[in-house]
Length: 159
Ligand code: ADP
Image (tube, rainbow, N blue to C red; front, side, top):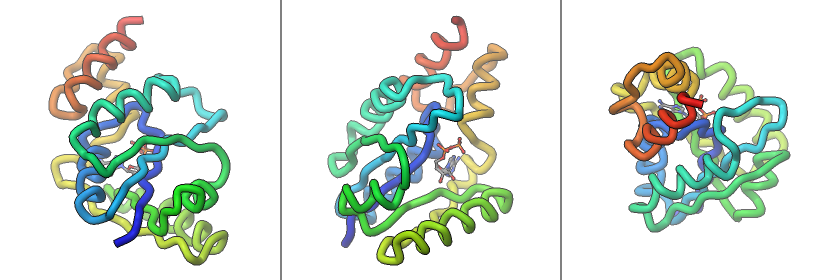
């Protein structure tokens, strides 16, 4: 078994993300959830907040650690000695972008494999952006994000 890396913005982590992380944690020896530091995007949550939320919601998974990276994902994967990148796939619309990323990552680093997991059907419509939109409009995010994340979302939406 190899070590895997699950990258994303996680702004904020949703139940769809958690589903992928839990399934990866059952398949791989160890999993690093890697929060992308992307200066061109204006996130709702700071890097520290996203890392803290992930630590909280992954506390029941002993082989999962949370990290963050800037620059090339394959470089970070190598640093963490991860041979596999795990990504979740929702709709066909995810496919084109993910194919491009996977092929580019393989070109950069042929020894690192990208593995795709299909979303749980109940999460196929779920994204961090739609969850933020609902929270901003005062809607309920129950069942879409872990309870602790829902609490943080409500606090942010009130600001
Ligand atoms: P988002 O697209 O929601 O902003 P991220 O950039 O944080 O999410 O995505 C990180 C990874 O998690 C990507 O591989 C993405 O396809 C996956 N992912 C996001 N939401 C879901 C979901 N509901 N089900 C399965 N995978 C998901």
